[in-house]
Image 1 (cartoon, rainbow over the protein chains, first blue to last red):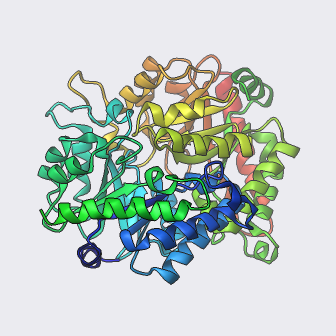
Image 2: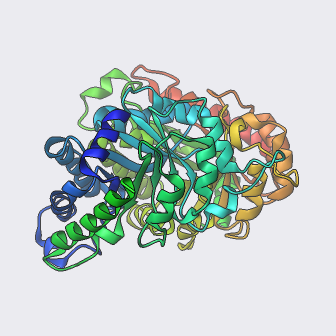
Length: 272
Length: 272
């Protein structure tokens, strides 16, 4: 999906919500365990219920890989279901991949060619040649980790170099030589508050994928105050706060209500 | 596998060779494509031929994921084959994972519980809580990226902070607070030459997993001169140089000869 289409979807639906499909067999409603493929059954119900209120879905690969073959099958079925029934949804594989060039090229082939996913999260530690193989597909996106939402983000990402530039800033600045705002986004955690101001100085127009609202404690208002651009420029992800809001047979309706609640907050933030 | 057993295996086999199973359907001998599971058939032949000369195998997950369900199946079969027939081989899943805590915990469960693999490569960018979930399994290892073998390693890993400490050094130093040499190793590319001396100042006893000998141009002698410890302290990986040395029906014999050649060099380097 190209940037303009994403922006159009956000305007039309008055939402920049991304629903994280971190589907864990130990957390989904018990009655689904009787299904042939409980992970897919859960995802399908969540997608059908929340699709009116969001513009993107983000399955995190860890949750699928951990169930081996069955997990991969559920992941592929989920992607195909989205492509078939909700072609206007932006699909992000949250995989945090990144390896030497020929290996990154294999990952790119898997996610962009075989599965036709829109975007992949990528870790920057290994530098340019670990990222550029993902940029060979037009209309496909790299979402590079910049400043993550977790406590450990302080261990290395905030370290300043001898010119006073912090690692996440160096990642933002350096990676702009690899691709522009039509193919690159950045992960910035909602828990990072005012640091969004510093980030917008370096990437004024890029989309940011923002996890950490909800279960991890980030504030949607704060993210928008410091991070929103005229094109919106944000995809805000919520996983646990939506998909595990209820564990009864009404889980999908409750998820829809939670997604709608966020969408309505987003609509007011889009039209201040 | 615990550290002492790995050291014993290295002494007994006079080898610190790790064979990288970067199995690519487009590169394996054509006659194998007639098999039910060509990836596994290739791996099995390579393993049977090279096992006398190495102490570890390292499948890189990218090469399996890229074939979806069939790829995962081949990966799982390869791991089970090694566990059953070669239980003294150290198995490394080269996955370069790392995510927020609850997600890293899912990856750990997948690789250490479900698959009973010995070690997983992990990317350090997200810091402590992205790494520590992998350290909850006794006898299981994190192999943290420190200084990789690729050109892009220069983009961020060599950046010095205001005290003059480079990022890879900070990763080495900081991560020692998370686990000791019984559970942590580091990836250091063979192409990094004399930087091994700087690395050994910070981690004098840890094992290093060293890719980049062969196709990537690193020198085994140089790695040993600057990186070897009294316990050896090295696992040197070769992938393409062994497994794709020949593409005829004799591929396994040629792979064995290449592995044996490296093993013999290693034997002299172990007994100078």
